Amino acid sequence: MSYEQEKEEIIFWGGQLHQRGLLCGSSGNISKCINDKILITAHNAYLGFLEKEDILVIDKEGNVLEGSKKPTSELALHLVIHKTFKEKPIVIHAHSPWTVYYFHYFDTLTPITFEEKIYLGNIIAIPQTTPTVTDVSPVISALENNDIVVLKNHGVVAIGKEFVSVFSLIELLETTAKVSLITHNLKSLAKIPPKKETQVKKYKLFSKEHIAALVETINNDQTARSLGEKLNLTTVLCNKETDSKTTISFCYQQGKIIQVKNSEENAEFVFSAKGEFWKKIFNGELDPFVAFNQGKIKLKGDFNKLSKWFPVFERTFALWKEVGVE
Image 1: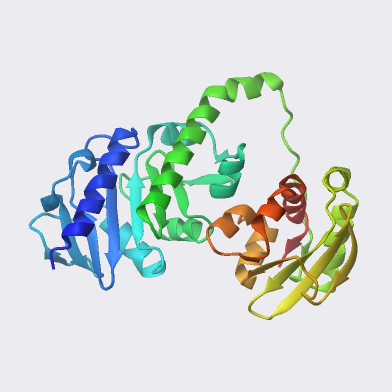
Image 2: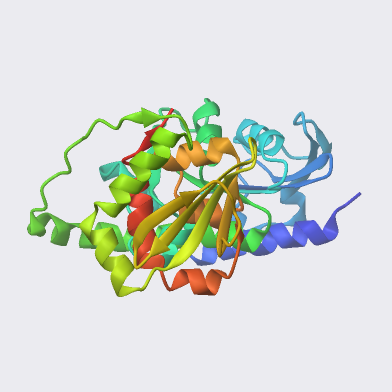
């Protein structure tokens, strides 16, 4: 098979990456998995001016089935990603300059705008000591929590179901890094003291002790309570762990949790996720908004109605990280 349409798609998005300044020269690479085959750009291919001959068809072991060129030098990275994340067939590795230089100087990037919080979450960079990725495992671990990861002094890797969603993550992160880098001096002038590290007690997920600690932390937080009163947070919000079928419903009245039930009956919103995702959320490894956007958390309920309470839930999710789980 020649995969003409898929090759045209890769050519188009390679051109978009080049036009938006997300790579230059022969940097970066793209792949798309189709059943048991992978389309991947060739070594030293100029993504901004791709020809169909620059796109190879390989099997999942990396053997070239169609094409006369060698695959990208990041072949091993693409192969492991496709084997691990079968439901996300698109992989783009770009050398976004503002992102690379931001993370050269800083270890993390904290989102500010709503779009950044929902689609990016907190971004960290994985240290790199070689020109190509030789140790894939840290990249895979990071991609389990987020669809985009930064390779320090190297570039970014993003995955997804559609080219447009993967491209938009890279573009959004580049803009965020650019603005953050430019405005960093303003933050320095503010002389904000560093946050003190606190020891977080660990609980068994959704145990009585865990739930009690959550309720106490949220109800005793003045910011959460004030936001809840101001926005009239009166609803029943249910968290469900799909592995054990554990169901916890928090009954809010004017921002205060007044009752906890082990049933989703009368729950206006139900959040369902595997236990591994809930644990990562409570331990601060996975952002709840990013998890929802990426499908790791499923929502039953009216998202538009939920969004009016965004500020109080943003504060609530920050407090969750103070109540870690084992």
